[in-house]
Length: 534
Image 1 (cartoon, one colour):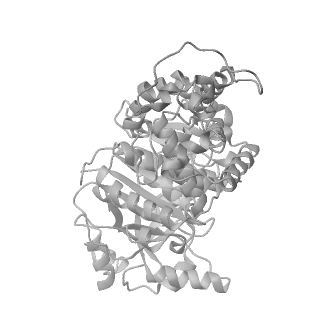
Image 2: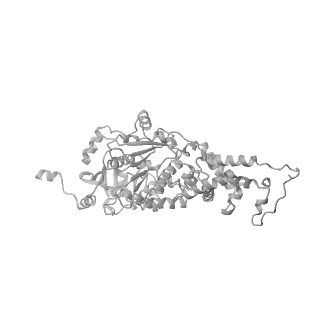
């Protein structure tokens, strides 16, 4: 090296050399950016995440406007290029640009020069979805049976007692073959189980109080009044669609559009959890693999944890812990690590922390708590985290051996796709040209619990009931029934209505041909989610 070059590139201090060695991976990895040291960007020291470690989960955190969304986009592009499918929740409506090439400008070119990035515009293969069709994307629906009582209780904001009662209702419906496809099915089952006829059905497994049933029905009515009905129904979305790759081998980026339900945070955060729980329910164990089968970004993660019951958090923690062995990586995206419960945070091995604010006592408390979650480092992290610019972050990941890497102040690369939304016409065209559009676009309302209970009620209503004061009908003499089966000797008109309904041919057939089959096939996951085997 010529003397003048050596003078212009002073030797790195020992601390920076140690950081550099911590990110010198030999296998495939994602490039996040270049090390920042003493106000200088060191492009020869690249900060990276080993590809096999992406299923060890992660956290992307930072205050509003610090660049979290662009970080997601940067990671998603590289995962797609490596053949890994990605799921992104588009909360603000600005992630759709991942599907089209970016637009070069001076800021992008300057960033690329700083970090020695060979920036070329490029988009990813993408599918666009919308909850219940509320938006431009392909409708994503779940049946009530599949969604399960635990997640539905969180959406309806039920307490623990009410959640347990809802679980009892689902248990009954599962075993009687009463499929809960939409909300009217659930209402019908609740109404039946609180009727004089239906109360007998739950005596052996604990009853359903009228007061609790009333709360559940009122919560359902309020939920529907807010326009929530379209999210539950058929055709139910098959979460295996999220695991697809494009014809050129790149991973599909699935973008769930959520601006239309921004004012319903409990709904969309719980629906994201259903997607994750359903994947967990279906995927086989794969152990440690060369690359993840899917990386799932869980945006606005704090909404999932707010007001969550202990049982809910325990199930979530266990799901996150176990889904790693099924090849799925989960990144929680929120403002501070404090938003994530400690048991979950402990499982997030990869961390990208953008700037934090410290304007209030609560901000300062959150800042100190965030610093304590990082490994020891040569940085004064309280000072660093409040001084980061947009597109800069503090990073620590898991090395190829699974050990935490040194904390690295990083200037992040620029995404190569469009950093903003695509126009509505282009989005609609992309959705309608998708092979999935014809499969999910139109809602279907087939026979399920509501229709079956209505039919059984009609059977009961048609049964003759003796008029008060009417003389008993004459019947031909017959032998007394054996003592072990006295009920067989009772006239049909003296049977209770519940026996007419539940004992009718329709219900017996239902219990034999449908109920038994579905009862055997329904196995609920940690979150109580379920679906028939595919």
